[in-house]
Amino acid sequence: MTAWLAFLVSFLLTLILGHFVLGELRKLHAGQEIREDGPTWHAKKAGTPTMGGIMFILGAGIAVFALGLPYMREGVWVHLHVYLVAVAFGLIGFIDDFQKVRNHRNEGLTAQQKFVLQLLESIIFLTIMRKEGFLNNAVYIPGMGVSVSLNWYLYLFFAAFVMVGCVNAVNLTDGVDGLAASVTLVVMVFFTSIALAWGRDGAQSLFPAAMAGGLAAFLAYNCHPARVFMGDTGSLFLGGAVAALAFAFDMPLILLPVGIIYIAETLSVILQVGFFKITRGKRIFKMAPLHHHMELSGWGEWKVVGVFSGITAFCCLLAYIAVRGRYGA
Image 1: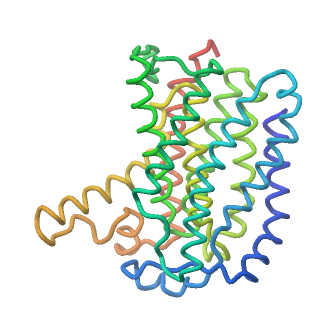
Image 2: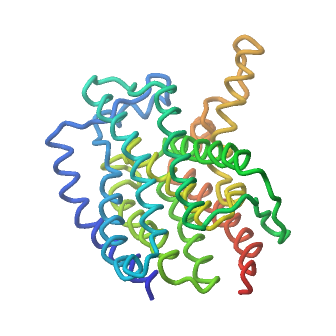
Image 3: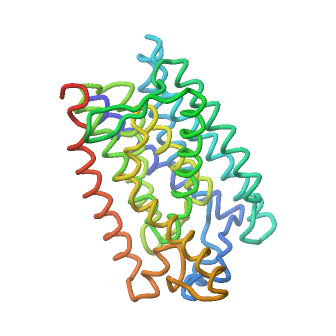
């Protein structure tokens, strides 16, 4: 019941708040600057309001705080920890977006500045989760029912790397109308379903369910043709949310199947840059990240979103089958 209520409350709040947020962004002239090296037809999107991620950040946040009060009174804070670490990553994105809007350039914080801030936030979150008893030194291997124990500091290094990588991978996925929101909506449904399968329709299901509702409502504004972009404010928040949930559920390796699109997008950039440097000018893809390659291969934005979301849904189903019985479900 908690999960369904969280979804509904967040959906309605985001839908309503979105109208006012969109209006304020237009008044502030918070228009998106489009990459000069991106697909030529994306140039017409210049000026579309950005930082729209504020819509679902607020909508989901209100739902999490309001519906989470009974659990907090009992001393259970996991839903709030996950939300706040996502907000912390979103704040980095907001600073980045604000600088882009102010300077009228598609450049904000430097990569080094982002990395240091993201690493610091990851370490703080992981330390809190360990202190709260949600993490130990073991890495659970989905589908095999076994865990590999590591030294805590080695685990912390591994976990922080995973979190920072996930956050930036989701950020790379946000390049086509509705893509990052649609793919992440599927991922949030997965985490909600697992919480329910484990008999945890409460604090642990609250945040992913609220996020699913918020993203579903955000797509009313963000699907093609988008009236607003989530910006780094939204994409870094989503990356932080996905990564934090993987650790809150104590199974970071689940990100391999459920985050298959995030991984593919990131690998396409790494391979493109590496091959370009090695061959001194040759490319593997027509353009990276992967969604731009598919666009230049003739795919429309609706098809990219549909296929990528479908692949995510299939992989999430496999992941669900692999871990649903972890706690005797």
